[in-house]
Image 1: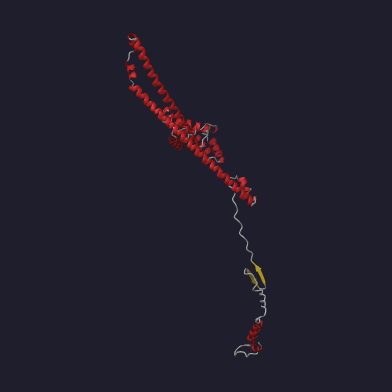
Image 2: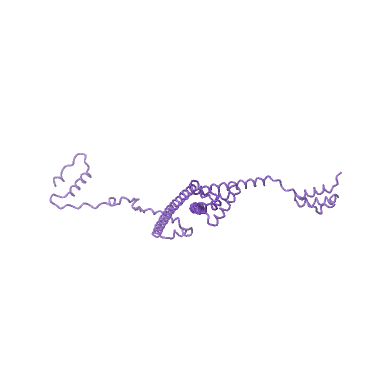
Length: 330
């Protein structure tokens, strides 16, 4: 090493460079020696990457997490309850919002289930009504067939029962019994047909009323008033009450309601137009004290001054008219 320290410097190499090289060489551990600990890092090397140096001071930049977005109150809450929503802590808000969502979902499920049950019930009732209507039509057809083609009824309609009773009492009793039995059969069929028809009409009428009340948002009293008004309008338009009572289609009733409202609107518009075009009522002049003696100049001048002083154009016109009436025509 001494030879190395005493070595001649290379040409052009400064003394400072030589000293630095010697110092670095002395720091290297000799073979077999323990490793020399590395020098401590300088202040510049130990500075954190997110620190900014300004002169001799260092300022650390704080990184804060963004605040969570506020939670909106449930839509189902009232205005007063929504005003107090901000006073609750976030955990309570999240809990209440979750419960409200669960309650709304339960209500929707209940409404959907109720609507599905109502649809199935309406379908079943409609099927029963349709079956009754078909049965009533079959009974009507059977009644007509018996009346038109039954030989006992046909013969009974041609028989002179008084003469038959006198000439053949035995045949009268037997044939009359058969004939009356057939008539009772036809009457029973017709009665059953009428009963089924009335039941079908009653159920269809009830379904129509429920549909209209729901669509028009009417209670029982409001629907009664609406039904009376519409029935009166239809009767005035030329429809028979018997025909109106047979209507069970809610769409037909809605169309009739729109026609009624349209006619009422047009009638109100016509009345308003007639009122606008009507001439103003004629103003009747009541005789007064000014009319007496207004033919004289003194009274007329006094009345004219009073009218001018009042500033009323109507009063001034009255004075002039009364003056003209009081002045004798030549």
